[in-house]
Image (cartoon, rainbow, N blue to C red; front, side):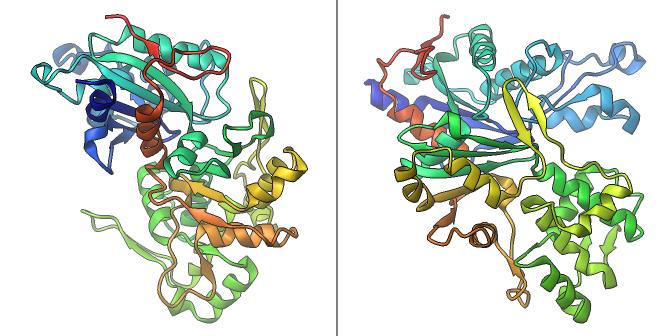
Length: 423
């Protein structure tokens, strides 16, 4: 089987998102497998562990919910290794989870050696601000977890994977997941010096949703992360203008009414006269600077903070419009108009709908970003949503794995190419 023909069957992509881990071979087509990017460390001293001992000291994938115990227990045993898209060099637990996820993903598929299988070409994606040591540790894990399943491996920044997946070589990519958002200008290759990282993502939308549930009489649900996330996804809206949206929702409460029933339960959430607050959820993601959020901060909800991780400062309160402008203006002036011609939005944090009858006050993510840029004087801009925002990084990894020449060896200076994996 020739090199290109082989990779058309055995390219394998892994997208290490802050909340979800997407993985699978090229043969899956449009939709990869998806599990939470997390691992659970069971209590080895318990009777249940001794009687029904798991095969591993860390549980990943679909079996994690079977081991969850008390809420107090989760804070120390349930580990999300990439909450901020980065892992500390010495965080042994986090790296243990990543190692288990790589093994889990490869074990999930059983290619037939009689069909010529000699190992996958694996393309793994990381945050664009990941330091070099993360590349070193991840590539080392692939060497350790090979067991004849990997032929070669490479690593690609997530925004670059998005651009490749859409066939765009000059653009700005905003990749926004659960834990953070990355604004990355691309001109043939990511312009690393111009990247802007935000310490804000879907998890912050969950936080404001939790506060809204407390205020509307559903405090018993406010600490159940899975429920809060579903409520956010089903009732949260992005306003074109927050003040106008709130005024309209208060004037016509039936039109804006927010209701959600938790599947398989009798639990129904109905915000009734407080349904105007559904617009706070989306606004908080795009721009947390509106004065209405000050009341939540004063009552104890953490304000998104600037956080330094390695050499990167993740900005907390910068809105998406300011973030894009700050990133583009770090690039050469003559390049800037070309970057504004193509702004791509990727990641589950941009999957917002506009319900019927609310088109005048609710908007989708591209429209909201255009409005934020317009308010700052940037008018000739094209903002587009990727065709499958949740999976666009995975799709780009697959295309990249098929496109990179087989004989292009890994280059530690450029952090690209194929690293051969020994069996």
